[in-house]
Length: 495
Image (cartoon, rainbow, N blue to C red; front, side, top):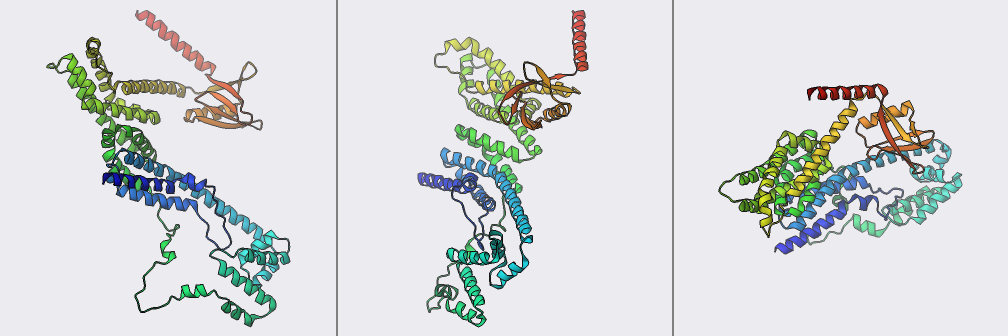
């Protein structure tokens, strides 16, 4: 039965992924063309409703889906990450659609003001709707061609839900043009589709009829449906995700990448307080594994070979390797908060102490053990230490730069370093101190972009790149040189 459940869950989750994928909906090659009188397809409302429904169903079956097998858990985590990420895309698409709708209304109003009122009233008296008459007058140059356009469009569009309405308009227009007001009702009544009469007036039989729901009751009103809210996401993060993410990576270590992606999305969607609280709990949980391995290193009743095997193959070592791997993935996305909490919770000190004590135990014993291998937790531990050191160096350079009152930016051109204008120089400095990666500006009708990571200036029209640098002002250079000379003298005197 487990294989049956697994196959059903995989197919079900795959179907949901296709339904909630915004790329399949927003960038589809199958376009829906709106006609007069038909309700248009609102992609943003559809995505909002499907995201909400899929989210509720997965949350309701969260414990079952994450405990079947690794494939189902992987697809479940990927789908939740996909839904939460796409929620902002649906909102942005909804905003753009509203803006387009407002622009269309304003354009229609401006064009409607230019229409001759007598021509419009003449078409309305012929039996056409006001919207159709306005569209016809905008499309055609005179009222005669507008009437012909309306009659042609009515004959050309016999399909759809507005078929009966358009036919009625055509018959009413013909009757009014002929002057037969009394014949209008007879024509309409005699030409009514008998199938519509049979639908509107169902037959009553002696048997109990089967109650099929009406189509309007089946279709969900998208404009009244609830979208995915931040309260729903917060409840999922607190009650579902935080309760099982450690169990998931301990049970299936290959899920560490999916868990890292979902945690990254949760951190971006949540507040700063939630992020600090989560990272604090994670660092506290991470700190227990190094302390357990340190206690193994300090045991006196074990030989060095036994200690090495315990440090390499024990359950604590396995858990430490997975947690350090997850920490490396999160540190790549959130370097500053992860490095700060590693230092505040003293987790970094425990990791350094573990590395120091293990090195003293491994060095004399390692050449004598044939079937020995390197512990899995050493590589992610060294990566974490390297990332922490890089972040400290970056923060120190950033603080040194923020102390500068003025920075002069220069770009390389014609074998010489040239200065920017004062206004552009100030804008570049403000963007750099704000922590932006790129800055775009216009100079002499040319569009440029500065990349602060690569330290290059790119011409957006031609793609040509130039290197850039920044230097402090002359007074700041003199003060820096004076501080360096004072430090050198003091050091020489102390020696």
